[in-house]
Length: 151
Image (cartoon, rainbow, N blue to C red):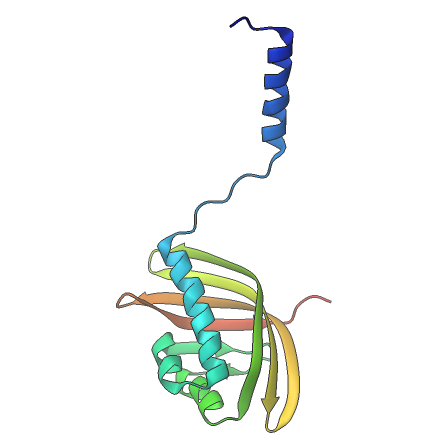
């Protein structure tokens, strides 16, 4: 095949077009997928007030921080749902990211919730950072901190 100016121009245009495309993201690892599933399972367990699932998904050393500054232990966190002090009606997660480092992972997302607290309806939308740890092959929530989103 004879190479002409048209071939060179076409090849150059393709190189420029490819360079302007966003870099492709890495393929999701099995651990990243497992942490995303654990986050989803935790939200479902909170809505269902499922004590067994909540306890299975949360590490014994849990430090659960609310955007208002209140900190809960594992027992306090589980009791809020099981006692029906707070009843979650719906949870919507947006902007999820997961970064895994060995047996630890950091999950971030925006957390929007519709709830009832002491019989009064409410809603909240906060940023959340969670630290998950792999324990016996299962991902467990070790720490969580919610924060107010910028206006």
